[in-house]
Image (cartoon, rainbow, N blue to C red; front, side):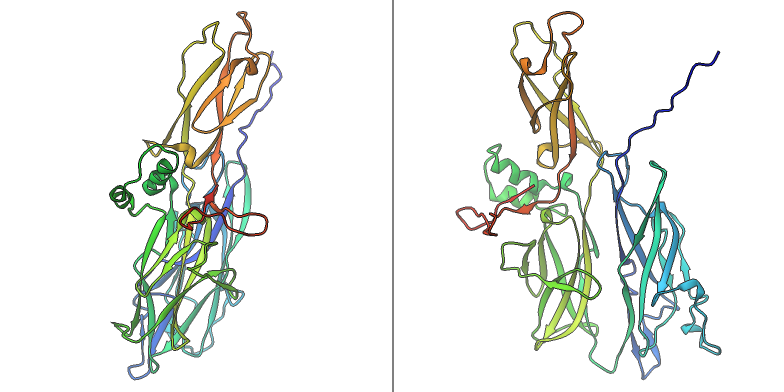
Length: 412
């Protein structure tokens, strides 16, 4: 006789998703140049296609996702050109082949490039197109779909009869920040908590490509040569396709540390996800612009408690430490990037909260542990989640707290 069955499912955390359009072909950007004398385009998309990727970043607080990259989960993909589905655009009769839509684009279906638009259409100087991507993410864990929609980006062509300026970044236009790999952050944390002494050479040694202090090389070109005219760079935070906020590097309330004629320096600890626009000005006139983005990663980690010793009858308190692994490596000072709440269960009490941090010291009396065989046990465990990006410490009036050197305090 079959007994009554009850199906129990895993309880997954909701999926958090972000998406932005990124040009993956540095040699074939979204803006072309047309040379009227030769009748040629630079670049010529018929020879060097432009690839625009809807970069999907996903995470779940329970660590159930093995990768933060979500393009492979895309479905019901749709590219819009000036609000019209690209697959429905009809070309004008007699239009030259290089200006046709049909036959001059491909929507990629392969893995991490899924959803990318490979574009082979040249754009006339008189034309301007707004591209947008729409689709859904299929979350197989929960059996649901999540709609996503990007802001628009512009396809346009400059006339080479005018001076052609361009900004070049010596960095990927999508900057990924993984706090678990940031040795500079860990060094600063140790110094602040008295775990090590400050040493200028050590600070230099740990400031590498994974550090939160990111120096992004930036160059202004006029034609094929570096610009020799007097110019300035300004950095804006992108709010939407038509809204931008100028960031003041001399202020203490933002992530922009410094802007020079050679580099832009950001504090990645203060950023969750943001898009930035760099503008170049000559004589107060904008001559070029370039966009890039920053994303904070949330890698999967594994946490273990380490104190497995039995409890003596006369003990009144108990100490334990957390061991955290990420990408096969032990995470040092994990409490600096992961919020860990220590809890206990006993026969008498469950879910008793003690403290937060990488270590714990709690009174056994608080746990409700007993003295008989049936109730003399104790389960110790940790509720954990990624800490968010840091924020600037300020009072209710907006006054920023600083140290004796005027450096703002940050916290998360």
